Length: 138
Image (tube, rainbow, N blue to C red; front, side, top):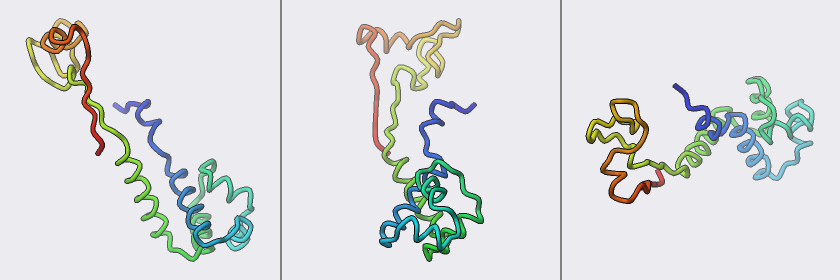
């Protein structure tokens, strides 16, 4: 099952494309008006795309890439790099009291076989109920 709270924190593809398109345009020293005119899209629409507020069709993306003199594969590769950087910056947090240990009849979710919620007795008893978290950057 998808955890939508976790899903909502992930960047959208339109946001990634917009960030890459804006970065490339600025690196080239070009204005919104210049690129919009060359791509035959309106300047407000291109601005919305760059801010990740609009979803571009493949035809529009191809036109913008042509205006920027890049291949669409370059756009995809740059978006992939951005996504990888974003994912690498996210820290992994594991609750040690629910890390999958099967102690005294507790399952991976921290429930005993009778359905009671809570950490395994080992985790609860040592720290007076404190929860230990393990975090690491990928």
